[in-house]
Length: 225
Ligand SMILES: [Zn+2]
Image (tube, rainbow, N blue to C red; front, top):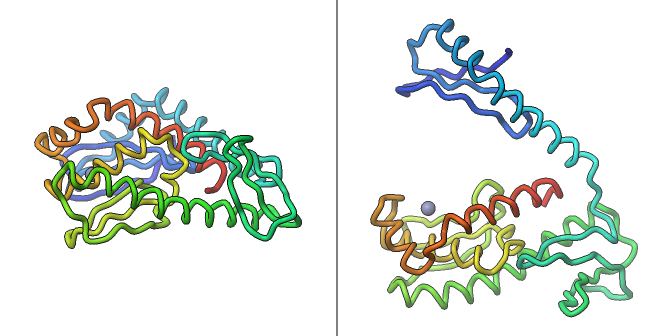
């Protein structure tokens, strides 16, 4: 089996499949190649399963076109993109539509969805931080919306909280978990058991929220959002 070998100052060997389905072995500096080969061979079934999943995801991503009639998630609900005689984008919550100007190309529609996500994320997440920060007794310096695609939120040493615009696709309870998570980092800048104690006081079922977020992330990635 072919793999890319990355050696570093680590103690243990680990393998990883990238989003593109490439196999990467991360090994300690002096570990013999035959040992790495043997490990990879032993993990063959796991590797093949995950590689075929990654390849299927890539195929779906490549064939996906964001056009009128496509459906996107907003706060955990499905909304159909609908062309309208309008020059702005707006949400019709009652009927489950996102109305957009007509005549947009698939790429323009995709960028419009991102723009819409950013605006909604900014207003919604600022509001949720306003709900939870006082409960946690913290005062974030600022709430910002980022384009991060690998994580939902982050917290800086200066007390700024950043959220990815993608978060607005998730259901409200999962969004609240991320808000609580980042606010708790203003108390504990790590993922220690003390940190998780703080999180679980306001969000006892955070593991379930992580699963929900994972599903949302897969969906967004597939739609290039
Ligand atoms: Zn964290």
